Length: 255
Ligand code: OAD
Image 1 (tube, rainbow, N blue to C red):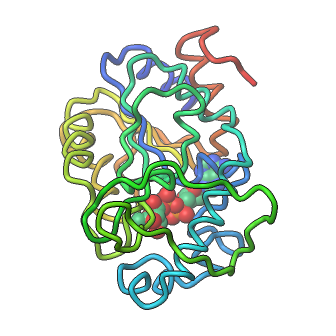
Image 2 (cartoon, helix red, strand yellow):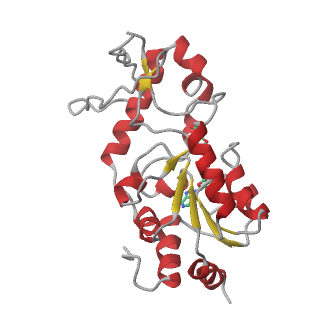
Image 3 (tube, helix red, strand yellow):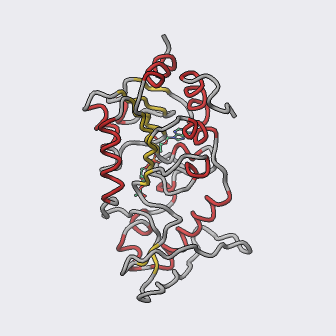
């Protein structure tokens, strides 16, 4: 029996499925990952200057400009066959570390965003949601361009990106919901994550510890190989539609 057959059998028999995703699922839409050599964002940019509360305090225009550049890049791309295959798994809970909106745009309802969202900026002082931000249609934002953040309509402090930075806690409700779903899962699919950023990387381990099956989809080895019952080696946009089709013939659109 191939790994694909085994994984499809587990999925078809499962009542509760969790899909846990990282940057790799959006790679084939054209969004760079963080840790892939050469192309990953953390190979090109210094996380300490861009993704910490201190960085925003020291140079808010640099940080805001970088996140606006990333938001604009996400707006220009489309969900891929991997996101669509996830949306075709009925009643699964999607837990993502990604700050893009590609799961939602592919049709997954209410994915849990453990690391926040590029589309939910809020006030850095009082927390008020900033609402919709202006688009930048005329001049494509450059990757190192400074841009002053807007100010809060209630208290006047700077608006900050709605993402979780290094050194910050995960949104409590999102993390609790994710742990509960992982604890109750018969099968957890972990897709396109290096599994090195905690506490998010705990999620697949919770399922494995409590006796559920973990199926991993990734072209490269990760620390989660150890907890995975099955490792499917390859890109998400190829493997996920094939897996969903093997588990429930005809459900994935196969594109
Ligand atoms: P990483 O960049 O750490 O890992 C991406 C993973 O995707 C790697 O294991 C790649 O092998 C894999 N990958 C690449 N292309 C793929 C493809 N086409 N299909 C499937 N997998 C592929 O990204 P994350 O694990 O998401 O946090 O990183 C976790 C967190 O670290 C992010 O949420 C972000 C980052 O710093 C914050 O911003 C708080």
